[in-house]
Amino acid sequence: MKRRNFLQTGVSAVTSAAAFTIVPSSVLGKAFGYVAPSDKVNLACCGIGHRGGDITRSLYKTGLANMVAFCDVDMGGEHTQENLKNFPDVPRFHDFRVMFDKMGDQIDAVSVGTPDFSHFPITMLAMSEGKHVYVEKPMARTFQEVELMMDCARRHNVATQMGNQGHSEANYFQFKTWVEKGIIKDVTAMTAHMNSRRRWHGWDPNMSSWPKGQPVPETMDWDTWLGTACYHDYNEDYHHGQWRCWYDFGMGALGDWGAHIMDTAHQFLDLGLPYEVDAVMLKGHNPFFFPMSSTLLFKFPERGDMPAMDITWYDGLDNVPPVPKGYGVSELDPNIPPPSDGQLQPAKLNPGKIIYSKELTFKGGSHGSTLSIIPEEKAKDMASSLPEVPESTSNHFENFLKACKGEEETRSPFHIAGPLSQVFTLGVMAQRLNTKLMFDRETKQITNNPLANMLLSGGQPRKGWEEFYLL
Image 1 (spheres, one colour):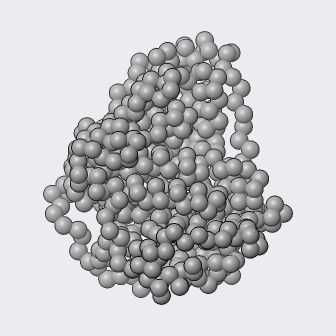
Image 2 (cartoon, one colour):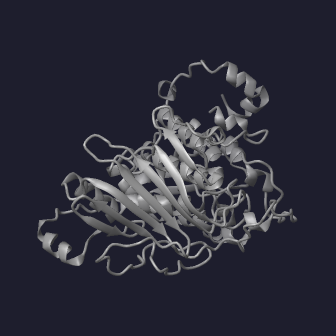
Image 3 (spheres, helix red, strand yellow):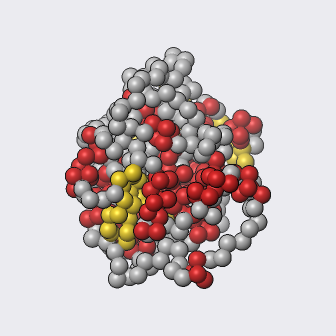
């Protein structure tokens, strides 16, 4: 069923036809998402400014993609101009729904570099039409949205990639190899920390309402920007990355940096979903926006022959975790992409992790930064016995486009990145409610807080945007 027909028929008709069987497109001709190995991938980019603009350029630089459509709700904004000047002939759209209606048959794959809350509808529509999808981290804002995205990717058999670039760099291959060779084993705890400066608004823990409305910029399609989110009047404090600090739109520091710090441990230690998430400390708790500092504790059960494991997350300038003896110097990886407003500022402890096993302790940074064994004397003793680590065959963007062509498998597909993103949604819920959550890993329900359990779905989508939850 075409989107335009969906809108004409209404949500109720789709709901009543839930059992309708669709003939696979491969029976009718060209398979969903098929790209000949000799062809370049015809790519549509949703979000072409700030981080979305970086993604657009990185995908193009691989030499594996043709830019066939650009979509951005603020196409006249200063932040979108670089890509518009670089690709003056690419068709432009404010609304991704219009883009798919007019150009869907010319698109093989889609990149989604928009605010966290708007990943879901764009990605769901793309996958339902058989398009491969690269979506920036985290996958979505709510637990249930991530669940629906994983299911949709499975049903439509498309290539998917979440944009945690370290999953195609040295940290990924080192962590994988060290687990396989028994260097990393019997891990009982990990500290994950992001203590660099926040660029968000001037914090006011006593704020009692949302910001007052302001005139919408002439270049901006505000209604489409809001998407599935509940209605808010435009305010500049929601735009240009500021959306990340509001619970209705973003996932805070945890959603922003968690995927770059926790991802390899989550995958290769088979963590899955936690059974408990505790808001241990929140400084400046507020129901509207993220606290100035947070300490969150995630508890994971035993998994096969692996012991139970805790991850403690620290964020905030004044919330630096303790480090073990022999930790050494905390260095900032120069390869970490800077925030949209400038350079990442060095902190007392730069973004990274400390991993504690029964025999060894490891320290690592963010993104593709590799682990080292601490203290240094222990690392020197083990240097000659450490296994050789293979190099990456492709960066994260090449990996995705090669997967679209059937040449590789993505390293951060939705069935891998989804549970990690769901960990973040549970952590954010504990922050928002300032409480401890008990989670049933089998039923995927919160058992000690009815309100939190309701928030797994994030509430009702805005009227007119219900269709994306039924695709």
